[in-house]
Length: 463
Image (cartoon, helix red, strand yellow):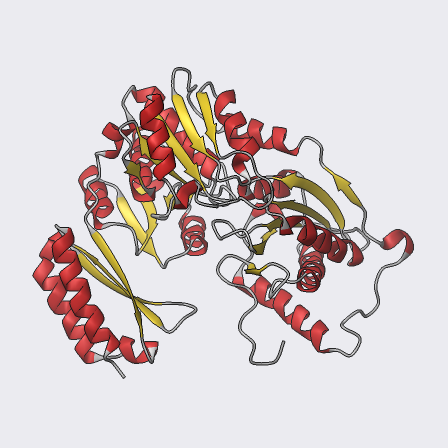
């Protein structure tokens, strides 16, 4: 880890090829550093006494490398003097929830979400189950880099004897999470038939149990994880099989989760996909009617479809727009005290019931809206018309040069004038690559494609 190494933490924790760039040694170092930093914060905040030990909750998705990384994370935490509560294979939002209710100082979820099986990741939660602020991640990263730079490997004085952290399993972790979801579901789902695609991931046990407990008839697909098959042609990134199953079985809807179940997409009875923007529209109007939508405001990212903006304007709902990433949605929700936010990808946050995106909670609230209203999902989702959207990833020599180019700015302004209020243009530099993403929404796919291609050609020529 040299002084010019890339940032260890990305927008979703530490992620990489398991046993490659995300090695057991790195997992041990990150967890030990996190235990030390968050223990210091707990003592400074008065949550822990000087002599008390930090407590960490550790969960994972079922990919094979999770077993190895769980052992490494547990070793790092206990070697740093933290007591470890292992909760096993659970969704990311379950780990966040249990971090709060078990009064832990730190939550660790080992998952690479929707990424392929060879990848894995480490996502950290602070006390209460909240995502770590950038400043705290920076502290942890500094500790990791400092330790790696010392001749001894950063071992330093370690606890010994009775001061070494203890490790125990939490036997009823899944049950506690399912009970929490039941308490957050305002209406019974009796009479609804849902097909759920669990992506052979962390939702495989939790989702069917939670939906059945709420009264739904459940058909589970891809709920047999073997360590290797997570996200393999299934789940929210491969929704065709779910759509076919919903139609073939005459189900009321389908729900598709990703590998760690922090998000979901839906399928209506006719097999049409209901994306995160449409889910947000349905939930926003439901909460508006029930008096639960704080300041009649919904938080979304710049990538949300213009159709959502238009639908919410018609309904009298204001939109707060953030940069892309659930981290920024969460920050805006907390800063404004708002009640609902999310992304087109199906990552939806309901702060009254969860500290992070929760695909199971989202699905339960969506089904509760159907049960309470007696309307189909297709009917509910029709409140919003998705405008055709084209996204082109353009390799560039210099992202900054594109951003400061007068020619590009003039071309974007001209395209927006051409589209009028019937479309929009967004140019967004990639956070990790020399790419600029050109996104165009327009009344037709043909128009969106023509405008996107024209702008992409101009962007690629900038030097």
